[in-house]
Image 1 (cartoon, rainbow, N blue to C red):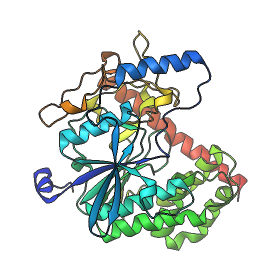
Image 2: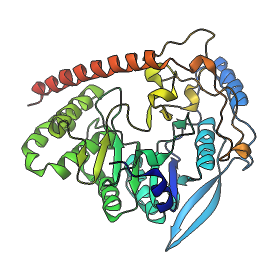
Image 3: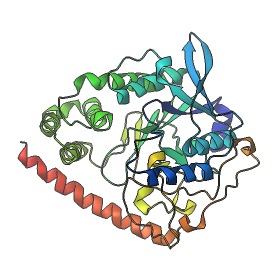
Amino acid sequence: MIINLCKLQNILRLLVMVSLFGFIFIIDYQLKSKQRADELKVLRQQYLADDPEEGKTVGYEIIGDEIKYNVVENPKIAIVSTVKCYAKIQGYHYILAVEKDFDCYQRDQFFRRHCIVAKILPNFDAVLFLDADMGVVYPKRRIEEYMFQNFDVIFYDRFYNWEIMAGSYLVRNTPYAIKFLNDFANYESTLPDSFHGTDNGALHFFIAERFFPEEMYTIDLCRQPYKYSRDFDDVFTYEACLRGILGARTEFDRVKILKKGTGWARDSWLTDGVWNKEIGDFMLHSWKTSQLQTIPNRRIKPVKTSMYEWFNPLAGAIHLDKCNPKNMSWSYDERLLGDSEEMMENLTELRNRVTKQQFRFFYRMKSFV
């Protein structure tokens, strides 16, 4: 049952949005050509407005019961601006955490971030952890819409495959959630010497072992492609195997997994950057600065396209000094505002294709057992 939003707003002291700096944000790759470099320069000039915080970002460190803030220089990025602006509009704390400020010693950076969230969480009532290539597209939605009374850890299903998304989750400040995050961060020690899929792949084993201990024989069968994985086909194979153990369930003790299309974010490239608030679009994923493209002057169909490019849905830059609860109206590029019926039809068709693909990948298990 969803919590009454008014009541929840009175209960929550602070809801904090966290992105981890240093290994998620991809600011610049070495570009292959001067032409592409010039194009990115133009796009940055178009979308990056003057920042009243002068490009500085809040670093974060926990000292006893006190929170110590320190200023860390960071280039201004369009993706950051949407999340920062959203947090100012809705009254949330926005923290761009710097991993060196925390005593988290996991070797794999993707597991280390969960340790960091566990250290931040005790200072707030709830934390929404975001991959740093996520951006807000519709700032009128509130995070509380995705919180549920009997659950402390909330994930969502990715749309383009059958993965549980490890790069974004919503957690309450409870001993259960803190232990869950620390245990998952330390699950790094179980990684095989293979193309294992880092924390995103490991999350499926972690959940299966935690909530289905009686199925260890089946879990170990799923572990065969995990141990010898060479590519994403093998990763998707063992994930399909493990999702077979989880079945149609979406609730596991105090952990909940939101079904496809019902989470707070989806991949932008599923609809070629086209979006619509009426289908639930709130945040979009896969906004990497180096992959930003110029919007073509034609009708853009809401169909699956390359995951290595995206279009900025905003018609101009965000001015952070104008972000406040009385100013929730953003200016959008109309070429990316899609028809809700057409988008739902295409996304439903994609979801059905993904379901068929999951069966095909599960069938690949025959090569490993």
